[in-house]
Length: 118
Image (cartoon, rainbow, N blue to C red; front, side, top):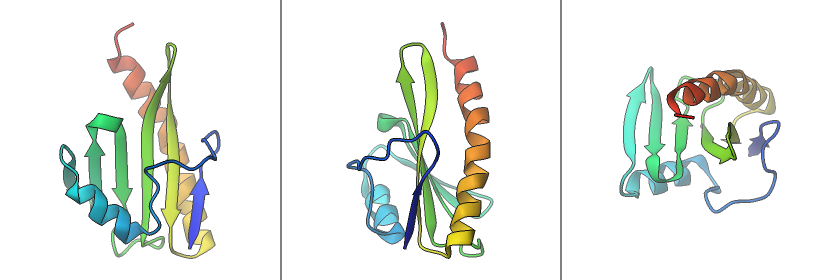
């Protein structure tokens, strides 16, 4: 099993980390207040209470099984994305998955900044 934290993330453990991808999926789907959707084969779970987005790879993805947890953090007037990746595939596939999401994070942060009143 390979777990990776994206650059700039908190390396400490947190209560929302799961031992396996399957356990994360099962636990999150059982929570009240979450929204589960399918997007291009990915299972996406929105957890509004924690400002979190969980993206589970489809079976056809090279990094499957894997989940990317992105959480919006606000410090003062600044917003950023904290990301944790739990990947049970090969290290190269997991590294590529992590890199792909790291490229999306600045766009996600910028979209949130535009929506947040100052």
